[in-house]
Image (cartoon, rainbow, N blue to C red; front, side, top):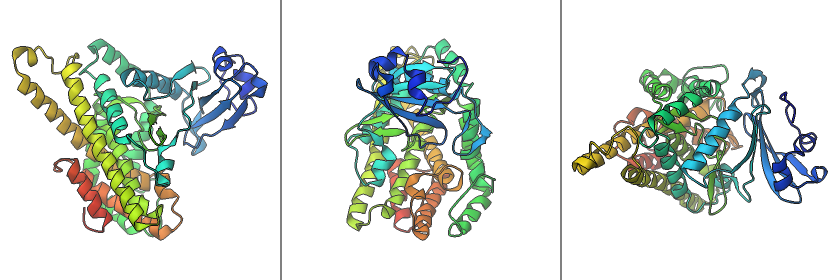
Length: 422
């Protein structure tokens, strides 16, 4: 490999990577016989599937700009460094939840990793009306384990501070979130786009809602200032690959240290958008209703498994500087320890509700949308689905401190779907 960065292409990849031992071992020694396909459909990077007589791998390389926009929006290559470090930490904290990293080249900003097959993106699976067995459990465990084990509840204080300092360098990708998620959707920013003219009225009302803007900025302050744990940073249905029975998490290049509730909140926001989009993808009303019910079951299970696993780790792996057992269990104050855990889970729930609502707004009003909604060809139907998401999102943000539990969130989603006020 060259000591100077150069973007790969299907034509040059075999020549440039063919000498790597890891590629010889996992793909095959005859690089000339490799099949190389560029499959990246995301907003930022190049992604290649490389196949040979020995097997196949994924090669992911960062580009020096935002792919969705072009070279007019430069972006540092170091995001591959943060993705690599996030992947190896996620693997340690929830083994088997992410692709195995086989090779990392910081200069070339590329990661060679396990190819997940026959997995497809969860978003694609959902749009086809196909369920994933165990999805809620897998994602609840992933979110709880990475949150707990990446925090001062579990880590040694020095290790956590060093880790937090390392990920603090992911400035530019955090800036994307701070701008595109928490700011731009709430005024007429240049890169915004939404379904017009059907949504113009509701969008104008939302952007006039001063109280909503205040609440969103409270959540943005939490994002920027509360470095509680290492977050995936972009956990949504496009960052999960699935079969009918397995779920794995990919693409943590937005990783940062932030609030416990951020990842699970963004994920649930995406599930809720899929819930409201389903009538555009499943024409049979009964089948659609049954699949929508499954989505809500996934949300409920994700949160219930998260809480159960978080409490298990609280009882068995609470070795960090926060809530030390010396103050609680060792003094016979087990009830106080459990009370503290429940209070913390209550705080996480309130945060996740707010982040979920904001995610629903930014995916309809901002730059980066979701395929469940964006691919709806009937503009009136699309706007109808999006309007439900906007209304539910607004309700979640404004009522995050008043909702009593996930059952209340799901009830609000059902009410919004049937045309009632959330």
